[in-house]
Image (cartoon, rainbow, N blue to C red; front, side, top):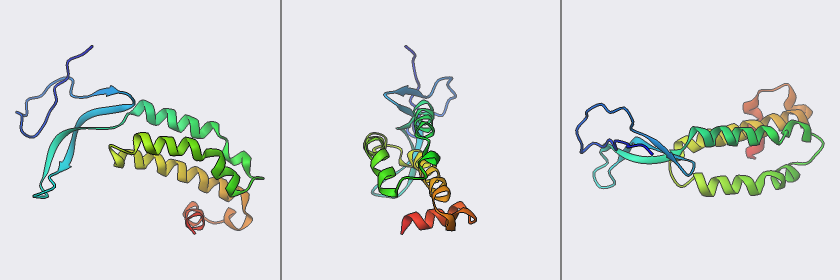
Length: 136
């Protein structure tokens, strides 16, 4: 158990040792927020995906070995990862969308590399071309 100082704009700006904690896969710490009425930025204590959860998701993506599925179709790959990714989006996508978006970009990059190994016309082009191909 530890005591955490919840730093916010309305409180004094003294320096404290512990200003964040992890709980249920989220890291609670001071983050920038925007007031809905006046559109003014202020500091609030908000959750986002924790570093431990990010590393666990990266390990799961790596364990799928998407490059080895080069003989499978895009529909198979989508069905293979769909349930897990949907769960991540429903759980971690509620808060701290910016931090979670970085994790989803890693997943998109992994699928783009899969597409480059599967299709000859994508092999000699960049990953960004594979991203565009997957988008359409």
